[in-house]
Length: 489
Image (cartoon, rainbow, N blue to C red; front, side, top):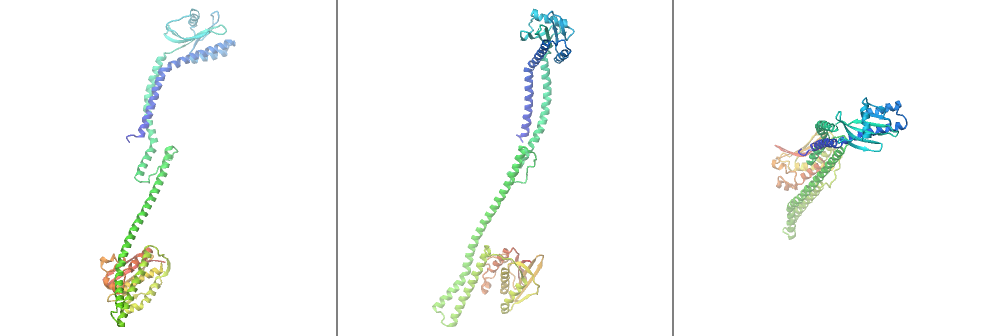
């Protein structure tokens, strides 16, 4: 990424390291010399206080004092000499005590001063200054004065070239700082990679969420704020996925409701159109024959009886059509309850065929059905009989010249298929897909002849779909077979 946090973090880390090194160089150059001189001055003051306290306690000649004072002088590289009031040497830390004795006396009595001497502290009993040793060309910090008991003392400590030391320290710090900066850059780049890795993972997850991909989840197990953010994003992802799922479900429901509304509107229009068309003929016949009776076109009783029969026949047809339409309306709109029960389908079919025996004999139709053992099924018994009734009544009306109806039951897996075959002409292929539509008639003249309404197969379709079972039709050379399936009990 152009503006990667990883690069920014590593850069900031390097800049911080370089800034720290530069600050150290500045502090060294500015304050190290003062700090070093202050330490030397404090060391001399500590030595003076210890010796003065020992002299007041009369412990200057004790072994304990000698050991402790040697420690102080050795630790701080201090040379000293102690003289009594008669300038006799009492204690010294160097073999060149004569030089130190002269130095002390000159400082005390001759008030030696030079252009190179720098007074640091001047009190009543002691003076601290920086002076150059002409012999070896080295600066010393010197402290001389008088103890409380009247003894004279001189402390001196070499002041190495602090400026050279500062330059050397700065040069060393620069080398070390450069290496440290390079190492810090590498370490910072690696550390920033570790820190920004979960952020990069969260970025990728958020990009997937933009495209509604909620499968990616943050897998970090640390307890940092980033891990907490990752867990919150996981929860957000689940919530968004669930919400979008609910919205899609609601949208699908709304779409189905809209489609159903449109379908109902179309069905209502189609229903009104078809009913108007189907009722137009019987109403016209009833109206015509009723007007004939009223006007007395035929005065003989036989003609009046014929007119009345026609009116009654057409009224019966209209009544049957209305009943079937009401049944179909209840099925299609789900107002009719399906009662699933266990019953013997063989007995139901046999009983119905037996009840139609008079009609089949009148039309000289041969009904063939093998003797089957009881076959129990799960279905709505009343509606199942209505399906068979529609198939069987159609078979009677279209049995053709051979006048054969063949009823078969075939079991397979957990289903039983009931088929009703009738001899006659096959149904035109282009009409097969429309058979289940309301008011559709293949042969309208023939349908009108036996009083069919074109609603029976629509009722079959509604019943079978309400029970979630298959149904259909199949053409043969010598006839047509209608079938439906039921679940075995």
